[in-house]
Image (cartoon, rainbow, N blue to C red; front, side, top):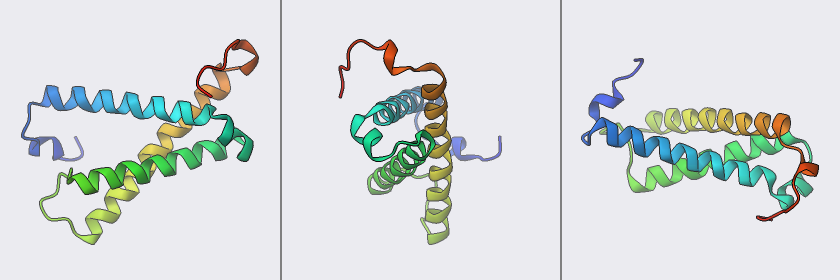
Length: 119
């Protein structure tokens, strides 16, 4: 492992990893719903630009929530820690958004859906 952050967790690792997996699934679901949003499609036609926007916005939102709630593996939060954390969050969420974009571009066709239930 590249980091020892998992060693600092005070709750059982199975609980932490289970909750983390659930949160990642919910984030991916939210990204997918956002990607298919007709409002966003009207304003940004290019799917990869839409994916980038969704990744950046979700990263900023998730970082802000984690920062306000105080979820951090660091005991002292310095400006450098904050910059590294937000940079990592941006990279991670943009990779996730591009994964959603690729999956939706390759495997989803609008003419195959008969109902538009969420938009």
